[in-house]
Image (cartoon, rainbow, N blue to C red; front, side, top):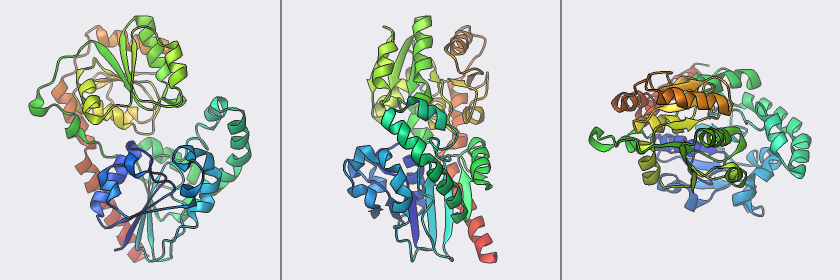
Length: 370
């Protein structure tokens, strides 16, 4: 088969790009289509494929300002020429699934989530946006929501990264989806020979510094309890978060994988106060042998077992997180590193690829029988 993989943009290596890598390993001859491509920002696995970009690539400052061009992306997607491809796989959490395909082409969408800024988190993004961005959101969002919902009908089969994403797809797109948990490189985070380092007395936050991930709750809680907190990641909220951080909070910015592994293996626990559709970072912490203290919503309900692999707190407030940290420290729960690493194996790269291949075969059979 001739295979095309459509990804929203290639400007870094986050969770969506790790999924893309795992899919490309199954299709080494696949071509990639995307809006914006920054080769130096992605892995060699992605760079070795032929990459075709939409006209967004040629617009001013596209490599960094691509979110500003969201209203143009429906038009840009529909200009991509996918004639001649037997299989199209769209990787969706931004605009990707809206490509036009032929009658005999099988289009499978792996959906991380329907676009947050158009649906579930629209009001939240509106509150945080500047004056011009707020006006643009109000002006273009109705049209983009209509386009997003309508293009869900162009997809033959949906897969989703969690039960949480399945519910969102059903609500916003009125489509069913198969659950295939995303791939996590669990072996990269597990200490060799099971030699787990002793915790070094700090809590860890890892992730983009954007409002909905709620790093502010981790900072406020560690300020209040005078606990050491290390923050790995960067983003538009960096300056605001630094302004509220006390003396026990350290910002390390972006780190390479070796540094991230080292910090995960040595932390008391990972703090995960945001709500994600799945959340790869908590699984990476489990693979490193460290428990997770997470807000009990979204993907955390599928990856963290309260009292067994971490603790879940029920209110997204600093007081609730403080209480969870104190519960963690009282010693009532025992978290064995070996058991945590074993639990993370449920989300391994091999499990993802096996599930995806099985799903693909089922889809192709259904298409042939139609």
